[in-house]
Image 1 (cartoon, rainbow, N blue to C red):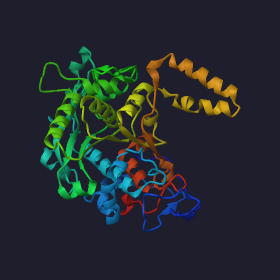
Image 2 (image 1 turned 180 degrees about the vertical axis):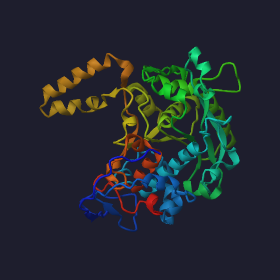
Image 3 (image 1 turned 45 degrees about the vertical axis):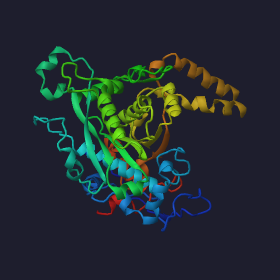
Image 4 (image 1 turned 90 degrees about the horizontal axis):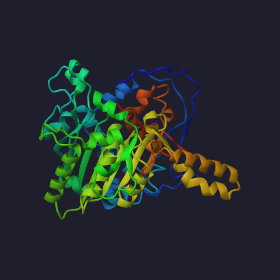
Length: 444
């Protein structure tokens, strides 16, 4: 965990109540909140061990177990809404309590992908999964999830290594690494609570040397290697696509991540054919990009795929406008959790979606010259398609500066998964950005 820098001096403190039922705020249609959360509107000095305490908190209870039973029952009846079938309309601002619990629940699945990864370079098992499928959740501190892990997943780099790498430590050139897992809900009570049998694919973020090198391959490439379907100009980041589709040619047992996902999802769909199913793909950082590619591939590959939803944390941009459009036509739903202070969410490339969406409005308001200039800039940018990206799905935008516990943190901390889960837990609405009762600080 990265250390804090530049703790702020003690300042004046003002605490205000944030009433979610205040008529001046957006009406909370979906959350029968029983109490009024406090909204923090003050700044206090950063404590250097804040994130350390957050990271060490046990997660033996899932977020859903902390909800009133009336809210938990509501989830099962409206699960498609919470999976984004209506693009989370009315659920993000203010943040619906059921949706908050679901985002945190999937975030904990991503945490398990990190915790089960063998980080020790000196270990012969470096970059593999430390735990067997049967005990992975329990060994990672996740108890009573109602899910069972059915498959460990690996991602393989397609980078051709120079000859000098032979003299480097073996871990430097590790081409294939444990990147996450597939799990399926197998508990009757949890299936009833969720309203369906949920399949989860969870991905960790960048860890190995070759994954870092793949991240730097920021140019866009055609996504035709993911599916045989006509792509009509859909392009994605070269490095992400390489990690998803590459295999080790001289070792048939090391399939590509794409092949492993297709095989396991196909097996699960066949096993539970006729049941009400959903597929939720979640990840952080690089894992968020892999989650988006996986969702895209699954929807193209399986003729009768269940509803597919991506819950991503701190993800970089993945593809161009055509890629985004194809995701939308597929019906794939993507919820991006973004910390506005996280630089990773602003790379790679650059985005001109706002020009496309607002250009007409600007011209109608009389700013013809401004609109013309924007279109001229966009035309110049489109001449270098290999760097023109597009944001996908819906966005839940958070900000580490809204938390009084995270003032003065550095770049790495802003990108940390624990920071994201803390911000989700504390966010109320755009007019009341942080509540004082955020649960990830209850055990200070």
